[in-house]
Length: 401
Image (cartoon, rainbow, N blue to C red):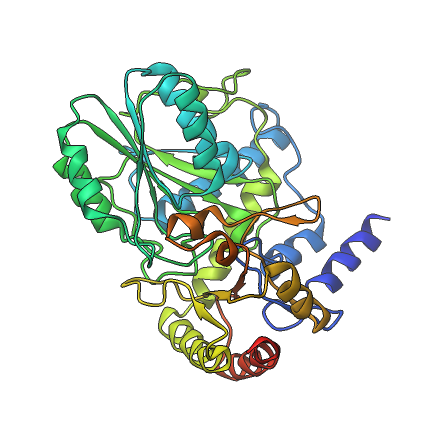
C-alpha cells in the first residue's frame, strides 16, 4: 500500500511547473507548491530518520543528525549567525507568527503592536485579538499600489513604549515587495522596536531572498510554499526578543517550541530549498513575468486592471487582476473550466464571495474587491512556457473584455 501511495504521489506532481498529470495549468504557487523533485526522490527511497531526535539511542541520533544538517544549512543559506539568532521549527507560518505575537505580548503587555492593513490574515486576526485584550494596536495605511504611508511611519517615532512591528516582505495577494533595508532604517529610527519579518512569500520570488539582515529580530518561513511536505515552517529569532513559549511540554528546541520535532518535514524543507536555490533565476523570472503581464494588460483592455502595477518593488511570480463588473466567482469558474487553477485572492464562505480585505485597504471599493483573480507562477518557468501561459490566460481574459 505504501509503495502504491508513493507512486500516486509521484504521478500527481510529475509536471512541476507546466501542467499536472490531468492536463491542468497550476497558477497558485502563492497558496502552495507541488512537492520538489528532490523531496519526491527522497520519499521514494523510504529510508527515513523516523526516531525521536531527543532519544539517545542510535536511531534517535540519526534523526538528530538530520535535524542538525538542516539547521546548519538554513543558517548558512540565509547568512545568519547562530550566535545572533536562534532557529526553531514549527508547523508553519500561522503557528509561528501567531505564537510569537502571543508570546511577546504575554511577556510585555505594555508594548504596542504595529502592523499594516494589507498584512496576512494571521497577523490581522491577532491584531484584533490584542485590541480586545486592551493592548494598543496601530494599523499602518498603504496607497493604491500597496506602498506604506510614510506619514504613518513617522508617527511611530513619538512612541516611548516598546514596539512590536510586523513587516511583510512580500505580500501574498498582490506580490508587492517591501525591501528589508526599509525595515532596517525604520528600526534604527525608533527607540525600542522589535521587527518581525513575514518572509513566507520571499523564497524564489525576489532576487535577494537569501539576504536576511542581522539587524532585524525575527523571520518566519513556511516551507510548503517552496516544495516541502506540508506542516512545517521555521523562525529565526534573536535571543534579545523577550517572549513566552506558548507550546509547553518537553522543552525541545531550547524551550522555544515543545513537542517532538517533525524530522521528515524539516529535512524535506532543506531538500526543497536546495532545489530552489539551484533552479531560481530572478532575472529570467522577472523577464518572463513581464512578457505575460504585457499580454494580459492588452487583453484586459478596459475590462479591468492589474493591481499595484506601479508599485516600485514587485515580486517575480504574481499577477493580481481586478475585473470591472465581473465578480471572481464568475471569472474563477471560467479559468477552472479552461483547465487553469487560480486564486480569487479573497475568502470564500458558504459560496459567498467576501471582499478582499487587502484590496479594500488599498482603496478599491467593495465590488472591485469581490472581483479579483490572482495568478502566481512557479519560480522557474521558461520563456517558452511564459508564451504558452500568456496565450492561455489572454484567451480567458478576453471573454470579459
